[in-house]
Image (cartoon, rainbow, N blue to C red; front, side, top):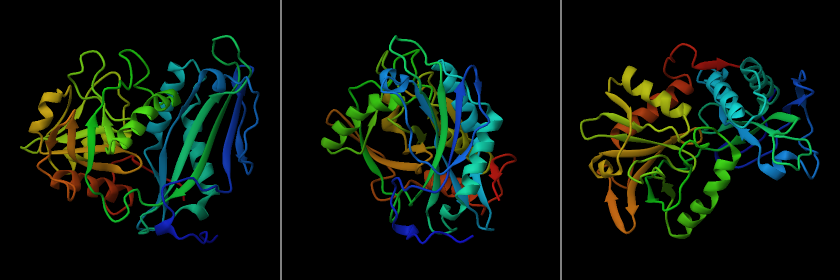
Length: 341
């Protein structure tokens, strides 16, 4: 097998169709055996539940070529668990966790020619998703569902290095207390689209959402968790029942404590504290960490001491260590790396 003739360093972060995808259908109370297909199209009724009532959830993870030439994924069992929980909350039949990991393995192996080479900065993005597929006109869960996984090679999220971004405190709410903010539902991201477009129109890169109940605590952005570093090098992440349990965030906290010997805290973070932090970043699958240099609170600027030129030293070390683990340059904790081949 030979790698596809792709300019890996310049493919950008977008969709590029690959050869195979995985499909399994749920009907009459059970999932079928599923399998790979070359057909990228989906055919369904105009009255499909996903089109009427947005009954859908998804995941995102990556496959990498490691330094020693293996193709691997990073902690897919946690994506399987999160999607299992998302489906339960949306009254969808959860896809079995072991089958999820097996499906990821199958689709990545089938598309190995699209896994970028080591050192290119590119990766193979993996998108599992599930949706209600049969005709539903009354407000109720669907009776039939489809689970799919497609892949697409993506370029480095930061071309030329990660430059700190400027974000704003948003007047919009991302999720309601006791709502669906803690699951990866498509509807959560639809809710954030107006806010992010508005932020971009105002000259900001992202939104900082505060808790909707009191608007005094930091929650997350539209698609990433926050990570802060105090002036005494303690790594702090917000804790809330309405933010997504990020796999990257959990991994960074482990790296901070067990690899770098730093103190970590997962707790409620008051917005009033933010001005006293030394570093700030947004963490997620796509970029691992996006450094934040400036936060605009309705015209009042909070400038992080780490500045607008580069990542702060602690966040840089966290980034280097986690990506080193993912790429095989640093020994991983047991169970973190799933080898495809």
